[in-house]
Image: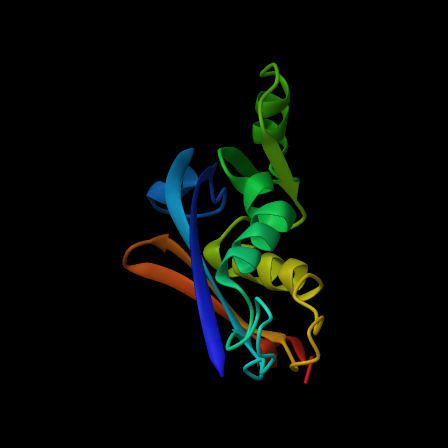
Length: 152
């Protein structure tokens, strides 16, 4: 069985080598969809009965380990030195420095790697992260699948 939880957050970025508008500072209303697989828990009288995982727990863990760090932050490539210097000059600015250019593809790969460590098989129901989808706009998104990471 697969289940998916969607969360939204706002963040800024720029793609320094891009030849179009994305080379400029700008922001997005991102949406992230987290898809987990597992067996449906059969535990009569227990809060998890009939679920793969409680949707509120998926949200809570995603916020704690990823979304809260990225929400209303500027996601900046560490190698974009002029931008990093500028952002550093802003008092109390929320900046997340990344080792890669913050494209949708790179961001979703980071998200998958981060969240894969979070959603563990805590219930004995073979729970595992299958896919993270990151919408940069309503019409543009990137998917990171378990098969992309050779995790089995």
